Length: 558
Image 1 (cartoon, helix red, strand yellow):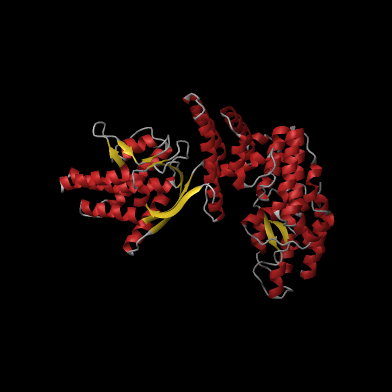
Image 2: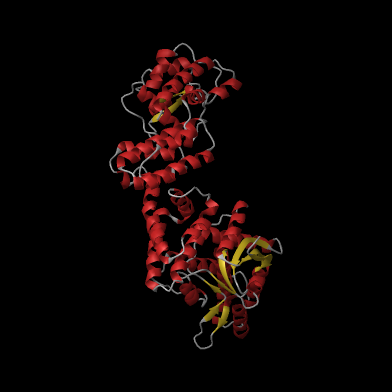
């Protein structure tokens, strides 16, 4: 691949050799591994040693260098830092022998030798180390001043990531305490780890080539974040533009604000929806490459980040009907809730653009149309969601550029009445916690349209979903067991019923259930008594669902 200098599989010792230095870019994400990941790595190492395996594979290590001496860690910093901390924890146990006067001279020599190989050279005057591994601007000082110096003293005012490093150091110290009876054995343990943990090392020349590697690794299932690369690039434009350090600090505060709103794990997804709200749609793996081509100056960096912060509030509000952005508008809150009930993300760019560029009334009109379009397209007809990207992107750009909403741009993904009614009439929803809200919403809307005084909330569990033909087959019904399984999850076989009455109905035969339904306040239960009280069979379910489909056609329309 163009831009890759070399690729090789090497053990940790070889990677560190020949006076190389490894630097976590100063704006790369902080140390974030926790006890679960520490223990997973510990168990892997223990199993490797106990089963006499010669190696353990640690995954990819992506490095950027121009001189083969100084390497910037683009991916792999969490694993590399943790391995260093394990080595330092073993050294702490050797130091304990020194403190207790056990083979003091030999163990002091061991510590010096191990430090030179894996940690760095110690300055004889300042006693500071020129570390082989240099962490980012938030983590390096604590790593250098305490962990590298094997200092477990209580330190106040540590950041979250510094506390994680401190706890990681203590975790491995305790795991290794008493494991061996001599410094020689601990030194052997360190050598075993360094010689047996293997990485696939990929060396690239610049950030863009690193991203090309990321594209390949992501295609193979390795989860790497384009937002980390983008952050490093944006900060580098400010840092290397000759700006005062205060500008970098301001940018750090703004980026932290963005992370606080969106959360790190959702940031790559947000970046894509943000960008697509005013630009031609791009795929997730093109976010870094595309934004990098647009943003060239420190001024553009600040404009971009400020704009992303504004849009991030809308992005997060779209996931929470109770967000203060929606105020006391109950209709708006219900529509926002349905985005989650239907598990919709495709329209987010459109809705972000609409919220930022349109009046409150126009935004609600767009949201209402989007929900109805997606109900037909996604929920009932189960069409390919990828085919929605282009129409939603066209509408988002149109709203951003013109400050009006031309909803005809969604015509391509609006399912016409005939197809919708035909598909609805045969729709099944296997019952599970995810589908329950969708089923409750559908039945509630149809009930309301047929005369029930109030709508049912999708999350109202008191409005339980009753399967008329029970989910557990019984011979008391006019169905063969093989046929019953094909009809039990049909919408025509479901109605709303109060939770207490549902428990009472249980798996009774149809005649007994009808008596319970007659006491319900829900239209769909009463309907069974009024229209189907004699028998319940395949034809009953088919007829009822066709009637429901005809009503649904009038409810979910533009």
